[in-house]
Length: 441
Image (cartoon, rainbow, N blue to C red; front, side):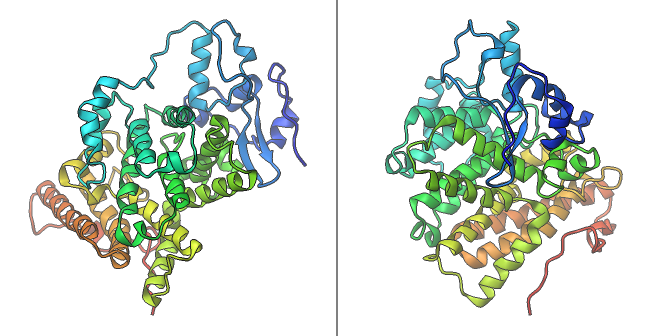
């Protein structure tokens, strides 16, 4: 049964909130930089179920594409993420909000443009590019890649709608999130572009495949709150309830991306069937980045490679390879040059980030965490990717991975004060804690 959308100027009854999946609210909602969802739902609509796919969508009402300054907050009918909700509410209270979406033409046409000419290089410095574009790396890079791959012409995209979509995507990444932010999304999108250029893929992929890949890469962490799934579950966050404790963040990223695609009208000229297929396949790609599903995907990948039965003329096989490519792009930092890889690690160190369950700062150092991450997650995945695509890029990535791991071991020895006194933490980890690599006979 399709639930009704309540008028935005009325309070939402408690019994309706409970029906809409907002059962267990907690203070952890503040992690999204917004009021309690109950308050949000009273002012901007509520979370509703789409009965066609049983997936939560944020009801954010549409009206005029242009918003006049004189219009009151109550009459605004735009699709608002949590991030943009705050900006709009500050705007209507008369508080000036800096526009982070302005593209500096001089920079873009200068050094940034020169960098984009080498966007396919593996040593592309996303941090420098972000500075040159005044914090607009995701918009600038993704727009350029759409043009480079001929997607604008092939799919007859309105460039203004494309720009608007990318700006909304960039804005819906939380700037206060130190890692899963728009710079990370741009970095993943650039890596995805490098993989799409690989010979096995470039000669087999269709424009549709490339389109899905770039959108999924750009939106794969959209509206990330800065905490992981276990935290959301333990704090009874409403997203955990909504997605039944399964791929909570990935489902949220996917549905946030769908909301922006619909709001922007970027593909409104396509048939409904094609738009629904696009939304579903983008979801498949984003859901594949759930690190808790790493072993399942790796096992399938290894099994295909052992049998030698991957056929890229098969659309399903191509889609699976794109899932693996996005997984690689998402965790490729240790496969970058030491200078780039260490910058990401420094961010993790500064903000006490890590990959659970290797992030207990009471027992682990940043070196230990990086070595464990490389050993148990990165090396197995990129080893199989190199089996699939044994190219110069694959060998370069494995080479950087080996050098970076050796560098972290050097840091580890310095911290321990003796090269012989190696911390056994990652020599024998509890098999119930770390992801295991199932071997096929």
